[in-house]
Image 1 (cartoon, rainbow over the protein chains, first blue to last red):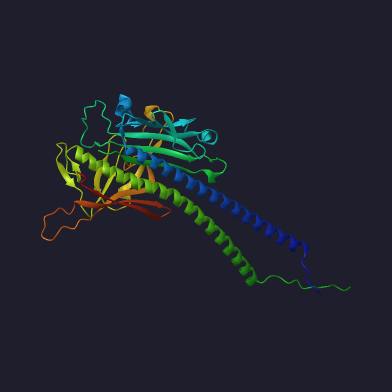
Image 2 (cartoon, chains in turn brown, yellow; image 1 turned 90 degrees about the vertical axis):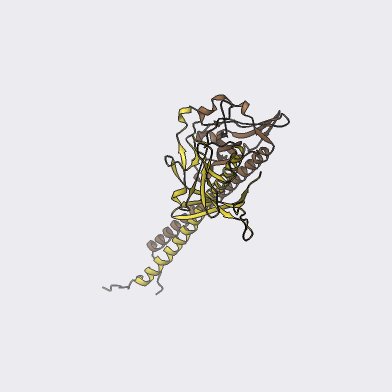
Length: 194
Length: 203
């Protein structure tokens, strides 16, 4: 007599196959999210590279415009939200963040905050508001001598330089989907010619 | 009365063991594939940050060299005293660490290649007194241990490039090769990024 499967055996087999199927599907979804995250990380790195390259180019031709800064900057650890530069041809450049800027995570999803450069009367976007959101932009200005007496102490940098502090989020950030939580805290010093 | 006694065939122990083994091999393969992907993504972020930290260190070194010119100190002077006399010089086969800090403009000092000796910390909450909006609660990588610990360690490694002729008193530290080394450590694994450059007397 031919041996057949019982109903209970068949049910158990179906349940096991279903569980394995669900596991495989969840893994597939996770891998899909990871590939999106890789793409976002890559976009973020490209945006940073573009930004730093632009700033590096400008610093070759401009000097820090100390006159444009408030004299109280020393009380704020020489940190300014705007970078002011001036050229030999009396042209001025400023770099700042603009838009609905906030450090609140909720505004990353709905708002836009990007970095602009103003050269005389021309305004140029140097980060893409559709791709990234700026939550923090500060420049540490070195040296900043409040009395213009250059009475700097021996442990201070005399040559003109500034350090950029930037926090950048990928615009597709969504708190419900962790894979989109792609951001970087960035710090880089730029040295101007002497 | 006739009673039908059909013998039920059961699985043997060896069959159960083989099935269990195949199942766990499959599960472990899937888990290892996912964990490799996760660590790969983490690597991209850490490596990007490490590369920029290495560049930051080199730029600070150039600012230090330029500062030496402006205050009439030797170009390769590491430290001066309050009378502006040079008390230490960069030399080949030595390591230094350089960083700006919140209150001081910058600090430079000899160091070892040990990870913890050069570990970077994130300043936290130091600017809340400024009442800025948004508040800066995490910024500035420095060696200040009061901050939040990071995965990164950073130092500059100097090597000699200039070969002085035999019986010459020429300064072999005229041109120095500099490696900006940033190491990062996570899950008991250590990776590193090295940016190479040279520094010399530009005047």
